[in-house]
Length: 114
Image 1 (tube, rainbow, N blue to C red):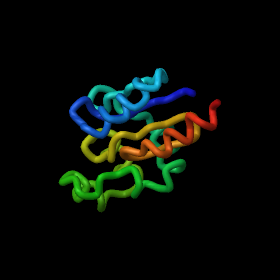
Image 2 (tube, rainbow, N blue to C red):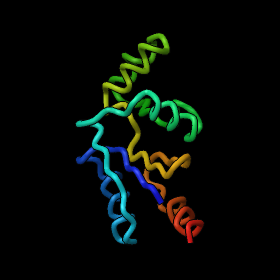
Image 3 (cartoon, helix red, strand yellow):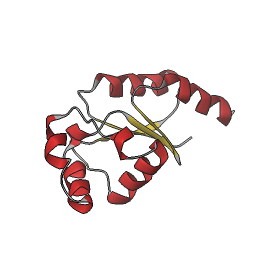
Image 4 (cartoon, rainbow, N blue to C red):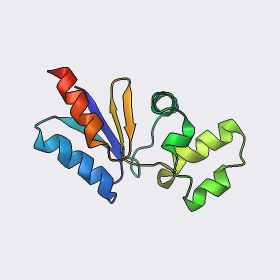
């Protein structure tokens, strides 16, 4: 497994995801979105695997209303520069992606690896 967890240090669901994999002895890479932004390629890959932009973005965030009406390229730039716009954690294992706390899906990934 090649687990990446995108989130922020203060997000409780991100902490739950880290604890989930740690308790099972599965190594993961944590990417703090406040310190390192996702690349455009990663972002597009995550959106595609998650089922679209709407699944990845926190539409209730105040910043969303500012980004909502921008053209596609400008909106992507705004999203990548604003970590609070992401629903977290974003957990990625290769081409598989979950958004939010999804322990049942992660258990399935682990069982498929065995």
